[in-house]
Image (tube, rainbow, N blue to C red):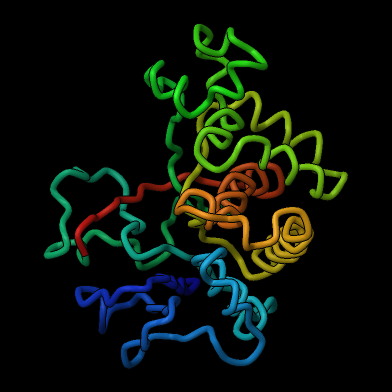
Length: 266
């Protein structure tokens, strides 16, 4: 059976996953626990961790560990969100029993696919008061947003939470082959596959990172870092990657959506 390597990226110790099949990868400025992979050595972008979040480790893995010739599955999750086997009662999963529910090997159902992404989250249906409060600039441009759920799309959601106009400015820096398609995607879709979580084959991962990180570097020239203040804006580059991942893996891979679960209070 083809091997599966999952890397769980975290800035907090995850005791219940230590000595488990998952590889624990450390980001953040605190001292890493023993046996956690660190991404502040060799070729890295650790100095951007505040703005790139788990992408800091993704970059390090790409530059230092990825072997495009290997026939294996490689995946990523993060400190509170984990890959879960299908057909489970999600509400019964907790930190005490989660190990028995985690995806730790490729499913037979993956045979006709070359990437796995999270089941999507829907972002339409926001309360009108929230749209007025966070999306007032969008309403000035188009007041019908308040009464037309079809306009509660990815682009509006991004403007409301991560800075008005930032997604449009970032799209200007995307490679020409994707620019129009991605813009259409964010203005027409009201759901996306979240958390920068995916499982794929090494050569596809190489293609993804080879597209993603140069785009984010071009975005840095527009947004820089010093003006990115507040949780929803400081991690702007991670949020851009999250939206682009949904589009890119659907356009360029034979993808399958799998279950994931979020555990709070780790």
